[in-house]
Image (tube, rainbow, N blue to C red; front, side, top):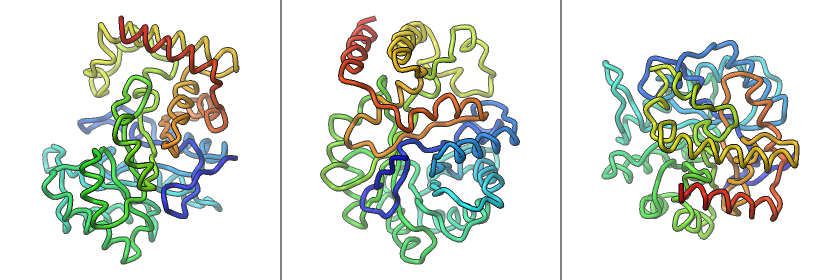
Length: 320
């Protein structure tokens, strides 16, 4: 199994990690709808059995529930994967989520995550969003203090632009950045990925399949039937006119994958991993069958001919 060094850390991760956003369940603003907790646990077990060696979660996913499911899944396991989580997003008594980067808040969040995860140290602790922007320096200083205290092994950020990365880097080294990245969301290519390469910052991308759109199982009928509690129901990529365009792209990815006996989602993930700045991609699943269908991306790489076909498909997609 290929392992890649994450930034300047001693973390050697598989090209694909298990993402837990969706297993947070319903009842919060960015929910993916109802989930079965036992199926979520089984999905994590299957991911680990397939060789995936890191799990990415966040305190805000399910307002703590995702971290609890991770702890449940790892209880009693002889070999533990790396566990990455995030801070900087908190909910008030009404469930409204907002940014919180004050030092005291980050320290409280860290202690709460340690309790929910049932561990003594977090392998990678990430600032979830640069919000509020004016508190980035205070928040990042607190992150470095947690690292010095041994509460977390390495520290990273998520959703930062290059200027924000530079502000944080002046205070303490950044292990990794976690940005959104897919063949339909390429904004990080121009400035952010080159910045990370210059400064030895690892990159673990999220939504490589555009929140399931490129996985191969989405249809117009399914998109129309997404539950009201699924945030994707109101996402423009799952609505016309972009929906039809995206589904047409999936069929072209399906044709590329068929030549290698791979699913469209594996093609989409492999496309993100082709960039030399990208260390790994986060792949979410709520059921064992979902991660089984995508785990081939651990060792699947596209050919030059595949990239030419995909580039042409993306050009047609952009013109539609």
